[in-house]
Image (cartoon, rainbow, N blue to C red):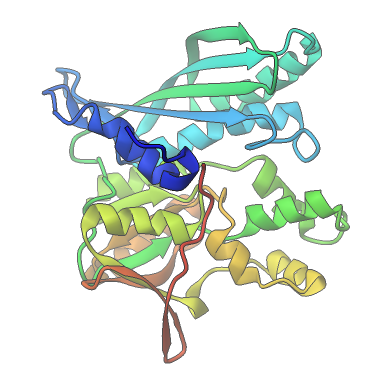
Length: 335
Ligand SMILES: [Mg+2]
């Protein structure tokens, strides 16, 4: 027992503490804490994927920037993105909510419409959950199940020295969108709606995750929920390697460039630490570059971007021209 506060040990410290109480493995759990999903044996051919995510009013969403329909969409989308990061196919969701009794029925209806829309798009069915009354901020918890063949499964832990680091789409769009909503910064300007909807209605990369998993060409994969600065570190930690990111290769969209100029903000700050892009970050040996380009063009209509290299020395670096600097620990952290 110590007198430390959760804020002292941080999010990782909290997870490690919880993990300490269950140090053993069982034959049913192929992968426990430490990846985008837990992976469970079913006795059948496929593996069962389980992921769960919580959203708290005022921390993960505020209705100042997001409608209730969008909150419903997003609550499921963030879980779908975790299934995508394993190479899996989602099928069943459970939804638990803590709501104030003063909440209008129409708010819950709006939330459910958004949730249903995302579920239909992803082929997911809602099979249960729990509802309770709260006296403070609303809480939404989604648990999502999916399946994956053992051959198509991709963990965070397989990165190898020399692998290319790829990212599926633009980085920082969601952070730029949030900035527009918070500052009320000319939403109607050309291209800005793309940024705003990246924040309000992220599109999980389910087809791409599955195609990359099935290709067998990817050593490790994660979805970008907290920003490259933090999420790539998870792949490095789990794989026992380091990474160098090439600043000039980071894909920044034109609307984000323009917004950054207008607000005198560094777009790389949004791209590297902004979070909530829900793109896939994956690593693959350089001999498969052509194949990776082909797969991503087939699925998304354009190629993924190569943004860096896996290296032996542990840590994270940013390469700017001939200059290599240690990367600050960015991204969103709880506690
Ligand atoms: Mg994830």
